[in-house]
Length: 340
Image 1 (cartoon, rainbow, N blue to C red):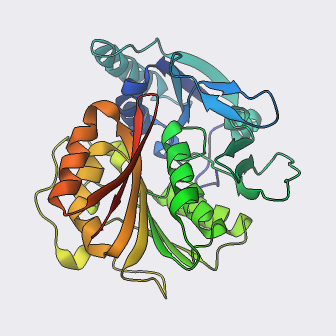
Image 2 (image 1 turned 135 degrees about the vertical axis):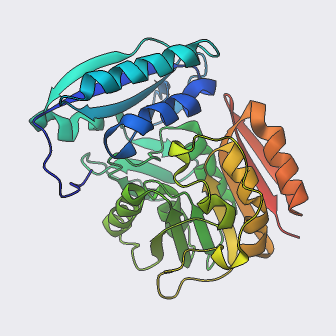
């Protein structure tokens, strides 16, 4: 993660908690509320492949969510608030105790890197952390990634589901929108798969910075345009990890469907929209997605816990979108819909 220009303290606390997959969303919200720059790292349990850098998700084991706190006079109070929040969440879903580890400044910059590995996803996509070496096979499409503290690393099942769908549905020359771009992994994948132009949006400035850096790292900055913002109703949520209310905004100004300051050359309509965000936001922005999709355009969406799938399906139907395919990994669902 890049420096924000502020003086950083010498010591940090790494906070981690193990929880079941259905608790990942609220635990992430809680840790992001207090963590440095709102960043969280989600580490799902993986089973290494026998032949090379292939991993699969183990739904029987808990997911680990991590964040980092600057060690100062307010740390103990913040830690107590987090522990209280975890206790309350533990009354609803299985949530483990808060684990705390002190990290020195020289270790902090690289502490999160140990949780990322080379991964092969789908037939051709290979996610390679920027600090690791990898010799690609002839048909590999390599995405080099420096996620920092931005969401979206390829480890989480929802990211993998979106990548598999992108590999199936992206066609050369498409104009695409990555809504909630996080680290930029999906926008970069779309570019490698042949999309001509990708607009990557996120309401989190850290994610915007990470996407720009990763697009440059993968030599696709000329095709991946990045801006801070969302579609109309999505803007009402702010950054989804910081959203307190579960209500869906009732209306949106149609003039605010896209950010005011779009990058030069950004398309107003898209052949494909990919959105790896949470169910309530997907449901909220469904009418706006339908507006910016061209006729015949596709929506690839994930971040949907199975228990809330019906909410998203109903919103898509109300927006006039038609189902194309569904895929599930553990408790997580990805949906592909088409605009008639």
